[in-house]
Image 1 (cartoon, rainbow, N blue to C red):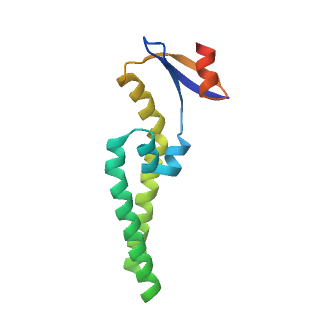
Image 2 (image 1 turned 180 degrees about the vertical axis):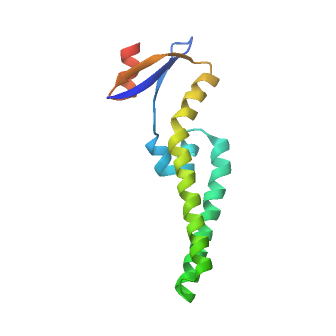
Image 3 (image 1 turned 90 degrees about the vertical axis):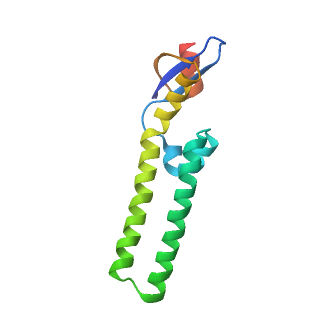
Length: 126
């Protein structure tokens, strides 16, 4: 059982957001934000992740071609650290962003329930 915050609006629509870590946001990063409707985050993070991915490829090619020198190790480590930090931010904040979006769209917080999934959480509160 997981803990969910349940939201509803005056039109009778309801939704639930799991409290805690957001695994889809952690694993899929900017693609998660794009498909979850967080377009501003996606527009900012997709190019950043693309640039980091390109830079990682360049560093990897340099290491293969010339051997692992100190400079390429440091740069490669910094790129990897940046990727990890980005994904940790997504995982930690993803569900908070979803809750904030419900409130921005006029939904009201109704309560917190323990349920197996979102649909069960909405049914329990409903």
